[in-house]
Image 1 (cartoon, rainbow, N blue to C red):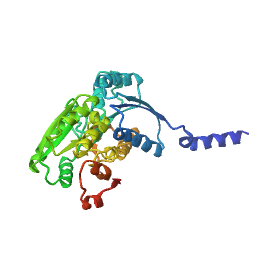
Image 2: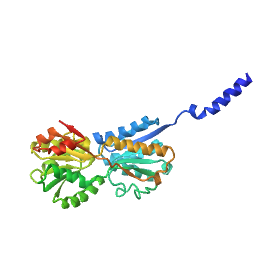
Image 3: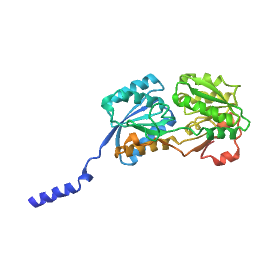
Image 4: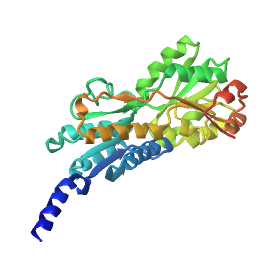
Length: 321
């Protein structure tokens, strides 16, 4: 009996790592609003961890586009004491970073942001190469020149482009001067139309009818959450509508050359895995997603009076009929 016991103990010691119960990580998520692109980011993140055998429990908070609510959620998350904080979009990332700074007990908790346009100017990190603190993530900075070139390919004679955004969203405010600069190179004047909440999207779109040749919606959470309002105005007035995120194309925009936000979330999940395995967020460079896709909605183009060049149809990664 003694020999059997000794042998069994030796076997348990040898198989220790195999028999050990895997840690289940607690991840608190703060997302500014529900819409397909941001929802795809969250799902991509969760699927990546699951597919890589990383067990996680999620506490998901949606601010419904309200900055005050986002700030409250930030402090609520600090009280949850998770193993990791995931923030989706710029406003919620800013709110959680501020809450983190005021919570000494959470200073060692990693914060990963995703779907953030410019994390440096948003005050999230010191630099893209060395973020500092315990914060890093994945940026969705738009290749503005490629977006404008795409729109110009659809509408070669375009001279004025409406830019529909929430002036209170840092991510959109950062993009505006970039669009103006690149627009000048292509002979395109950028005409602003601003909103402060999703209920204003319909009226803001109507306000530029007759003033522009087309409308462009950046990765603006407020506008994208109410995209159907902009689509309705554009269809009624034969005004072409283009977007920065491909998930908006199936909702009625003519086209977008943008990121696959599911892959964007999976890329963030891969970063989370490395951090769980010991990587230091403070010296883990901020990443960007470089792979772009062209999505085209043929029916939307017809409703808005646009004839799509065959070359673009052939080039499209995805077409909605």
